[in-house]
Length: 366
Image 1: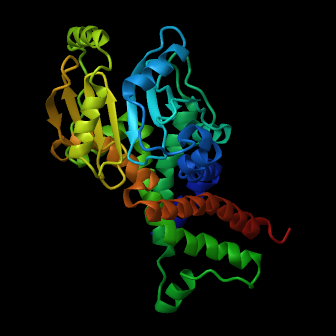
Image 2: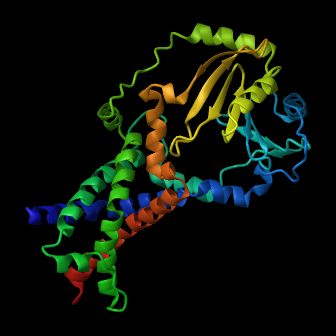
Image 3: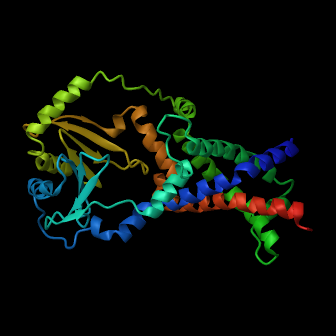
């Protein structure tokens, strides 16, 4: 049985080991993207000087709206509890577009772009730099990443079986990385000991990452946690159209009033977002960036008419955020993110050290 696991471990790793290494390395690079980006492009995200009073939402929007392209509207405002952070104004187009503004001076900071390095790392991580085919054909980059990740799960599990030592002395040897006994011994220890230290975290990354690769896996994964996903049948189109028409009459008249109410009720929240007829208040949910309490308010009066607490939300509305939190290591704060980064880097090194050991064994004498 052990011999079978060795053969599986080897022959599944050889053809797709490079893809596994690239996926792990690019994923590690993305873990601290937010901090690095905000450090490099600090002028977009932070105010020049903190003052006692910020401009009103209406004043800020009236300053920014004339600077936008024709047909582009401000659809929401995001306020952080950190007074040094700029307000973020969400735009109607293009998708997920936003500009930042100094709330004390009214200065438009602009619209930052994703750094080219992280854009490349993201495309490598998800699609191996491939693009979705316009004709709806096979998305080969996504498919290869998905298949390699699935096989990586098998490689990791077989690696655990192969690693299990026969006695206590063997256990000590397989948990240590020796330096000074030559490169071959070092790479062997890194592959064996480093792999076992990172294996559980790598399995967590791979098993959650597969939900973005295969619909059948995603549905099965959700069912394991008792979540049934339903598709939107589009019956709310008329309701949404009427809501948009109402919102266009008084788009931001009571936004600040609603924000003040919610900030007083939720002093611990790190971020509050106000948009047309709705608001979200971020909550601490083990690193789930999508976790928030949701409110609806009357655009004409500013009266809050309903609320949906995250703690009371259905599993189906929580699962994607939880999966993402586990995948990138957000769930435990900075400590788990650092651990995830180190594990991903080890994951990138494992195929390379495996290749080295394989070719050294096969062709070392030659």
